[in-house]
Each structure stands twice: as C-alpha cells, then as structure tokens.
Image (cartoon, rainbow, N blue to C red; front, side, top):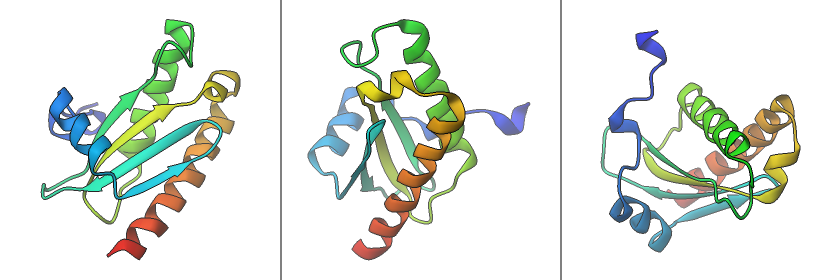
Length: 120
C-alpha cells in the first residue's frame, strides 16, 4: 500500500499555499461538478488542495467522498507540468455517482492539460 499513498509533499498544506493559487491562477477549468484552478510551481511535483464547502455539499459523508475521489484521481493521473491545483466542489458533485464523477474529472483533466500546454 506504500505506493498508493498521498504524501505530504503532494498537498497544499496551509492558507498561504491556497491563497497563492487563488491569487495567481493561470488556468481555470470547470464543469457542473468542479472548478480547477492551477498555477505552475517550481517544485519536483504537483500539489493538490481541495475545497468542498458545506454550502455546496451539505452532508459530511458526501464531502468526504468528493475529497477521496478527487485525491485518488490526482494520485493516478500525472500532469506534464508541475502545478499547484485547487479543486473546488460545485453543488452538482453531490448528485452524481462515482463513475460519472470520474468521467467528469477526466474531461476536466484533459481540458487542464490542453490549457497548460497552450500557456507554455
């Protein structure tokens, strides 16, 4: 199971990290389920931050599901550019099943890759 962890180096850890992405987002992609903000970093890997607001996803079980699925997707998909990412939940994310959520994230990931390549 050690190869399937989500290490500390892969996470945005504090408010300063999140603020840096919110203030300097180079790429924004969204759909009905999520919004992804990305800004390139100078680290050896990409980092992920997740915002699942109670306003958008009411029940804690469902917020945790959103975060778990997002972390798993991030862990298994590699970006060509090292970026700091913040994924924000949208209200619709609460209403879809896991395969539909993964398909939605896959579409967002493709758009994100395309926009990051265009910015370079």
